[in-house]
Length: 601
Image 1 (cartoon, rainbow, N blue to C red):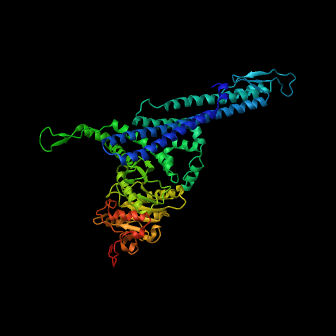
Image 2 (cartoon, rainbow, N blue to C red; image 1 turned 120 degrees about the horizontal axis):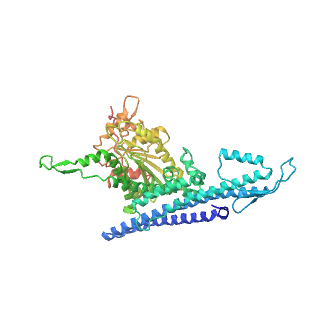
Image 3 (spheres, rainbow, N blue to C red; image 1 turned 60 degrees about the vertical axis):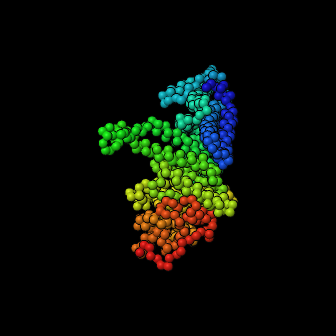
């Protein structure tokens, strides 16, 4: 880049263009939300049949297109701001060098060279002629040493200063040229395909584009306020509120996974960030699965004898090479499909908009899905699933909290409700090998506490929300560990099928007296099996669990059977949970209290 081009460069024009792309992205986001939460809802509720189903599929594609536009516009906006930042830095260096040259009596020429006046050094009789020097960028120990030697030898005292100015100008021009060279291909890469279909490949390219913009914009991104290191949810909330819209957009575009995981940030910001991560992750998973398709596993036995089918050699070899990875990817795909199905179910049986408050495919996966905006809700419930929970199976847990939302909303006398599925920890995956151990609960409990505290930090309603912690099976153990390790930021606790909560009294769960609720269904064998691993010790050699009367929990009437039906629709079990979530514990139906304590003895 030459001197005239750099001097005439106006960063504000690129920043205005960045604002324009950000505004376009915001409009795309609003259009996506309108399709998902208004148009799609109306279509599902008012129109039935094949034509309606086909129209709904087209609306989903249109929503996906708008989401892609929103994401790419965010990247373009950030890239333009990053380019303007880099060139502006070089321009400031150029202007500072030119100002210093002028103050030093030198003249900067159009080609970047510097002319200096005549002068003589102290003690010299003869005045040395003026001249012109051309700077060099960068420099090295050797070239710097040679320049110092030339300055010392030169008879004109202005020569050294002029050379310094010229070198600074050359450095600024080179820095601007490097920035232009660096950013040009990154901006060109953000050009979308000229078709109307946003494919998995397009979303995978977004991840590549993001990496390119992040790499090119390192200086710009490093200049932005960073999230607090190991910050509390309040720290995180304060940081986010202190960012300008441009800075928030840059973090969303380049740092979506981090933004989506920060407790204390607004639900809308976390949802936007995590949906970006979800879309890109889903594309990567689908593309990788397409590369390792599973061959046919069984074929008829050619000998016509028993067994009727035999396993193919090709499948055996494939399984040895790809089987484990294929299974992991398939679980991730199923989980992401379940999350998308919840997005698509908005409006079904009155369901509100869903918010994705956490997401990752790493390990067993993470998914935190809210029904309704918790930042504005009067009543919140945060549910922790138990053993064998992972991203692949999260759909069932999401449906459970959808059922609780419907009941609680009906019972809340017009108050708003948000129910949240919190798969934010590594749950034990094996009932036999993993669930007897407490470290899964102990390791996950701090994250649960941070999440609950984050709901306070992001809440925008004038009054504090009423919050219920709900746990199933091993999830109740995690809630107990959260209460034992710190302050459980909840008003009520619901425990279902609990194998023990690491404490022996309801009063140790950090909620007001009378606000611990328990359910144990007929034929649910988990509570008694787990009591010796997770029950609280009452110091008399008895391991207590929440269904033991002396524990002190309210034993809610439970009309379901087995370990997994506590959230079955149209049951007393579900209605009782909904009443607690809605703050109507006085209306909950309780089991009669036994006349004597016999369990566990």
